[in-house]
Length: 343
Image (cartoon, rainbow, N blue to C red; front, top):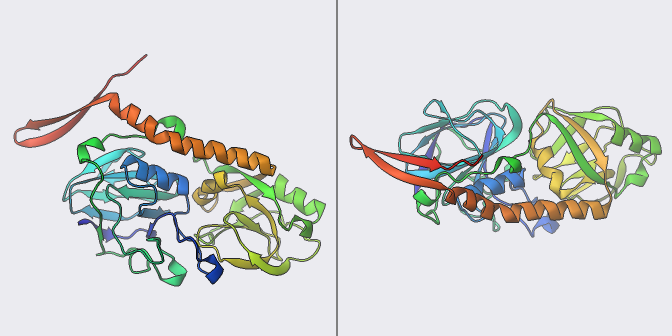
């Protein structure tokens, strides 16, 4: 079912899901949504399966024409979304009609937004995933970023549209995007390749995100980190969040499209529950690293996972507190929501 037509593609708009797992031993990157947290919340709002594909918008969003009535949700970076020229609420499931125009500007806060459509994005999976891996030209929409004229199709929504409209994320679940990010790391696996001064520099300095950052890696600029054994190692595996430090001493945080192996020493790894912050850091933003222990990283991930698991229930409870009406005036149908406020 054709649901959206791309009028303008934006800076970089791709189709992403949770990634292509199980093929790294063959050199195939995982890819998938750079900010999994915002991605999952977008799918949650329209009651898609967590792994269903959505659009990932980077820095400047597209202009899209709606072809079919449906429900959408936008999360992540604030690119000033508008529906027919009027501001469109984020972090909430919204009904759209044929002929509506959905547009975005440059990001005010954050780097990547996610647009989920009830029913998901319908493209052929490649190696078990719909995610776009741009360097390999596979997955997503013909293996590339969206272009003007592309038609985006969706599957059938799992629930009636009336049961989706108005579902929203509670404010306490929406993080601040203020351009300064504290990112927790576990030191290693090659922190012994750095001097004590180098590690101190890494943990006590601020690093600016450079314009060269992309889905492969977030390149940073700041005080050089001193090696003691040189920057090169025998190539080994690279997990998401690995912080490589090449010979020039400037760190690179590896993201969704990272290569599967690499030969630069890794001073630390960003913990899983903080990776979304790196994905949302745009050029000019500041990143500061804070070391935690492995048990602390595990505990942070448990909290992160429990928040995600509890959220669908919280969203539904909030939605149930509202009364939704369909009103017809002069032949035109309006949907009205009445919410009881407690003081």
